[in-house]
Structures are given as structure tokens and as C-alpha cells.
Length: 48
Image 1 (cartoon, one colour):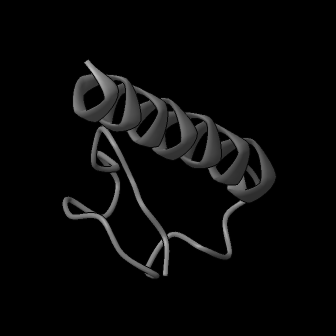
Image 2: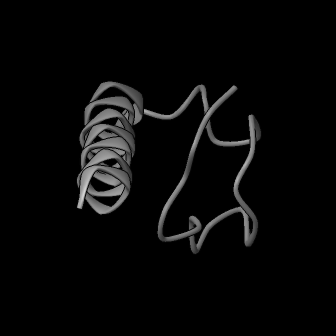
């Protein structure tokens, strides 16, 4: 599953449509960083 934020302008919606693009690796790293930061913020909110 791919978390795309913000959604790709080319596909118009997050999903596997743009998974075969040249920027796939960069997009994946960006999504992974966003997801990890979201989980970190969520855990901080729960701890506080």
C-alpha cells in the first residue's frame, strides 16, 4: 500500500497508478518519512 501525500497531480488521486514512474523511489521515501513522522506525532500525543 502506498501513502501518497500530497496526492500526485498526474494521477489525481493517491494509489498504485503512479508506482511505475521514474520518481517512485523518491516518492516512496517521502511517503515513508511522512508516515513515520505521523506515527511519531501520534505516539507523542498519546504519551502526553
